[in-house]
Image (cartoon, rainbow, N blue to C red; front, side):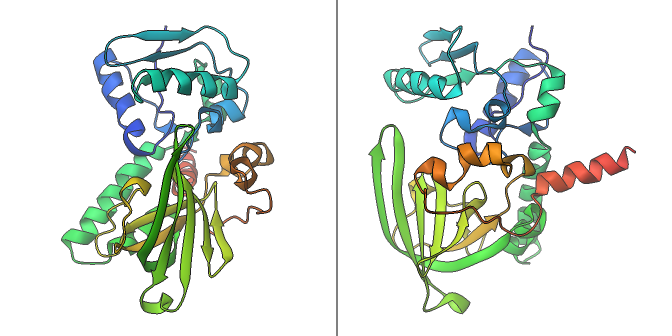
Length: 281
């Protein structure tokens, strides 16, 4: 019997749905997740990367159709089967996997990501209310850095194999005037190049926010003329290992000639883990 729930990823609605399900099931939610961000494929979470079996797994749609996978070879196979079923379900489905013990969870979970999300939201809203810089507030919480400020001048977007793929180009503003930034994406942002030189890659986060309010700008709403700040946020430690980079590094998305160069700084969730670990000693 399940005793706790944990989000598969802390990005977007997938961070919130486990909270709603947990409330309905009267179960506690673990303060952590399997990605520390969002990734487009199931095998890209730390549960799969560090050896937790992907099945049994279950998939359901709004019409209460239920598909159960008792056994599949690995998470990559599950990704392929589950994506095909999800397409038949209209492109949206609820998904539950994998089952694991408490000891296994402690080994593979990226800790305190829900707390980090709450801190981030509080910092941005406080900065807006007090008329200080919300982007600086966001960077202070996440351990990130400002990569670029610019205006969107071109967006190329296509749907391929169930993913939104494409690229976007930005013309520099302010201190970045005269430079150009290009970002390639597959649902999430993958590679950022400034004037042709790579400045950030997965698994580090490349985030677009409104340059005045720090409101997130996701790939599906980027359009010509938007003025944004591009933030770089260092990946969690669990995503920087050789095992993880083989699955979520640049080469895993087809960029075999791009080497991962980690952004400076410490991921905010790792900072929280260190702080709270020290506080309990």
